[in-house]
Image (cartoon, rainbow, N blue to C red):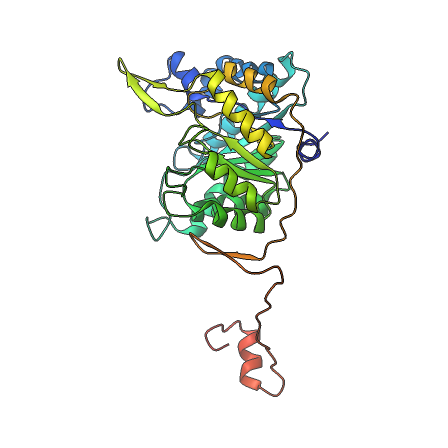
Length: 342
C-alpha cells in the first residue's frame, strides 16, 4: 500500500525529535547531524527503529540539513544514500506491524531569499532540486518539506519536488505565536499556495507546543481540502542547569494531540523535545479515534506572499482577449515572447 492510499484510510503517525538523541550520543555543537549517517550509522538506525517500534508510519531520513551550502555534491550523494538506507534498515528490523515509509527530509537552507535576503529564488529551487533528485535516486518513499518559515522558500522547495519527482509531498511550516510565518504569511495563504502547487498534505510543525498551535490547526482545517499535518514541539523550551528542556510531558502532549485528531487532523507527530515515548503514547491515544477524511472546501482563493483573498462561491472570471489577427507587430511580439510590448 502506498502512503497516499494509507492517507485515505487512517490517521498517519509520524516520528518525533531526532537531534536530541544524537546529542546524548556525543554530537558536538555545530556538527552536522547528517554526517552521522556515515560515521555513526548504527546509532542513526537505532533512533529510526525506536520510532518504527513506537508505531510511526513515516520516519524522516536524517537529511534535514543536507544541501549544497553544507556539503559538496559527492558528500551529498553519500549522505542521502546512507540516510535512506539507515531508515529502511530500521524499518526492516522493527517489530512494528504497521505500514512503514521512509521520507526524504528537507529543511530550510539557512539563508533568506530576496527581498529579505540575498538568495535568488531560482538558485534556491536548483539547490532543493539537487536534494530531491538524490532522494528519488536512492529510494525515498515520499518527501517531507518541514520547518519552513518563509512562504517564498516553501514555494521553491515544493516547486523543486514537483518538477523533479513523482513522489508524494508533505509540507509543514513553522508558525509563531502571532499565527504567521516569520516573513508574515498566514495559514490561509499557505493553504492556498501549497494546495495550488499540488502538495499532498499540509500543516504545521516545530516552533510551538500543541496548545499554542491549536488555533493554527483550526484555521488550516477550515480551508484545506487535503490531509492536515500537526507536528508540534513538546511545549516551550527552557534552560535548566545549562540544558534545554521542554515543559510538556508525553501525557499532556497526547491529550492535546487527541483533540487535533478529533478535529480532523489526520497526520500527527512530534518535533523538538519529543521522543519515542511520546510517539508510542500518541499511537495508542489515536488508535480508536474515527478517521475523518478531508472534505473539499470548494473555495475560490488567490494568495500573495503573505495573504489570501477569498471570493464568493461562484468564481469570478477575469480575462482579456489576446487576438493578433491583422496586427503584424503584435503577432511578432507573441512569437518573440516580447512581454513588455504585449
